[in-house]
Length: 76
Image (cartoon, rainbow, N blue to C red; front, side, top):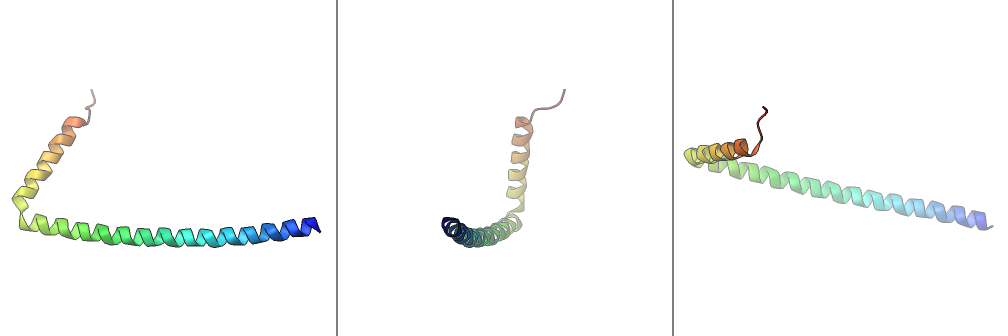
């Protein structure tokens, strides 16, 4: 009788864990969807700023490239 009770308990625990895993997967999907929406909004904002001020955008990009080039070691 104890083994049957243990088996039923194990089965119920597995069902509960499976349901919880589905909830976590759903929450992760929701978070991913929100991140995609935010990334698209940030991209659109950046595109608008570059279109409105192309010279400043080029200067900023050049400055970042220079900074990265000075940080990254060269091969000898």
